[in-house]
Image 1 (cartoon, rainbow, N blue to C red):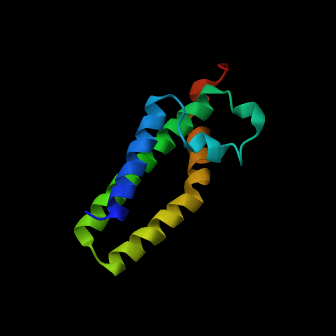
Image 2: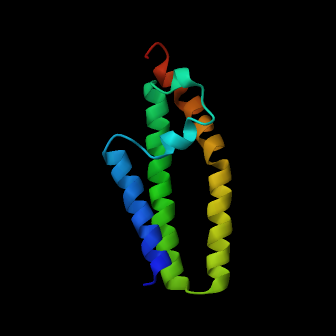
Length: 108
């Protein structure tokens, strides 16, 4: 296993630990595109828990695929897919929050 695979597995572990610590790492990214009033809402935390867990899976899968695939084409494909997911992640978070918002009507 090379440094890049280990790095992705460590990223996965860090994402998981951030959720377990109650401070999902995606909240720092989400705050750039979310109004400040929403930051304390439980739905904001829930959406970021889901996103951080999803990224933990993506990072782990990336590390494993790179380890198994071990080719430049595989690495390039994975890099492009991860970049694309990074670009749409804020949109996915907002869609998730909109989908879950009815469950929070009148709470927070």
